[in-house]
Image 1 (spheres, rainbow over the protein chains, first blue to last red):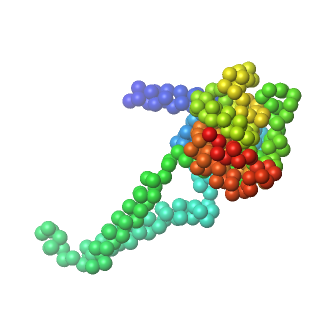
Image 2: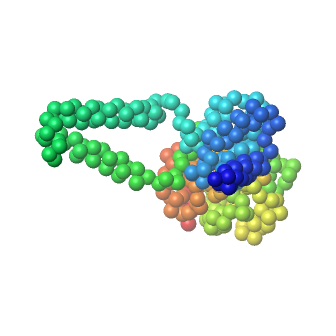
Length: 138
Length: 188
């Protein structure tokens, strides 16, 4: 058990170290946290399923540099996301913005939840109508 | 009766989504810049550190901006077509991306230079403003300075005829100022 914990810790520390030496980030912890938050939420436009924090593509390095520059200039997170999406499209935002095109996307989990609840309710109601004996016989 | 219709309707909806979704190209990312004015820039030219080339030089005519670099193998594939296109009268500007001067100049000396001029962008700063992901990419810029089209991957005769020529013809009467010569539209 101790060995397992030690191994897990080693892996976690190694991952953290790897992430830390990718780029010189900020001394200010708050700014640093925003930097890491942003580059994990911006998708690499070349490699599709990686964030620019994960990707080794040259364009991802360029975009990390731009995020760093914009943060140093005092831009807000929204301004930086707008900077990215105006150049690379909404595609680069892992978290889609709430706007008319994405209403259906944001609403779909709740619609599915309601549909599921209705189906569940119907099944329960039908079961309630059946006499107990019949259910046991089948 | 209608309860039997529900699974069929659900199936039909799912099938419609799959039919549409599987027909899409997952690696196709539309450019956010189509129909927008080209991003402004001014960079040193590849040939001369002191000379400048930028959006002002491109503005006012139908032109291509081709993103290239010597590290880009696909660029080598499209290069011969770009040379032919330039010879037939189409103005092509280059954006040399993440490259080194001697290598890039050597490439043009040995393979031919199709570019009116190439902007030198070793850090990819201007490339980010243009939404460039990698080379080769080719932008078509209209007479009004707006981006009409962007092609990712090598430019070929087929792509040129199919995607570029109709867009150019739509805004050019042939001898209008700022329009490429007719020879360029049928470039062999």
